[in-house]
Image (cartoon, rainbow, N blue to C red; front, side):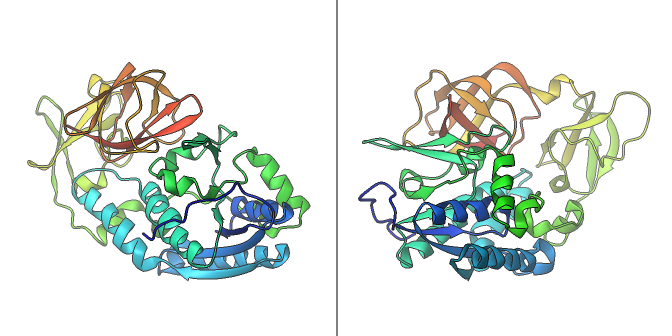
Length: 363
């Protein structure tokens, strides 16, 4: 990553802002608002996956170009698929191979949207970059803080928690102060065709296909037993990588009684542990370990007033933090949490401030 030039002033009219235009309504309105505020705006469309049929990249580019034309700004298309393969997709496969459940969207933000794109933008003379994320930034004399988006239903700070001080110090989030319905209204009033475009969901490169089918193209599953924690075999799995903690669908275990859930994995013996009942004790954890931690303020937060999210859209969980010798973090929850999933991210907050987080580990 190139050295990010330090900011010499706050955003002001005439500054050059390069917006990541995705083809969706949020980035479109971000560009529109910035143009109306007097910034010199340019759009960049990022292509991160080579197979357009799988992730609708062709249509998204058409939509992004249409928005740029309507707003009256220049747009450039940049192919980051090689960087995505090396930095995001290889990690995605390695995590599943190791039996964990990764979140590639978080790594895409860290490695592509706020690293490869950031470098590209500053090579084009940008003063700032902007995206359509629902988050906010607060500057002080000594630091920059990442804040939740004001629309609690759309807040995306969870996905941005691994950004550094240098990265967030040069980013603008124009829709972070707005509720989503207002964003769509602004787009509609401006005549933007994407005003009612459906929000993207799921992982881009998988598209509409079943997840098991996609993953099976890259990783070979090994069949093994599905058994209860007390050792009773109740079925057979086709590969641990196809299952995640808390999963209910697709287990194929018949019989009467409460539904079955995945409770854990033994990678050494290729065992998938399953239990009956949503509230089975094996699905509840009072604590978790965070590894490979990243802190926006560069150092771990002090242990007061903390809450955590262990998945996107989860309600905040009051917790206590203790730092271990290996720099991993032990989180103790006030209430037991359901289906704590290795490979996912635990993100810490203090009120509206996103502090950072790490990868949930089984040990």
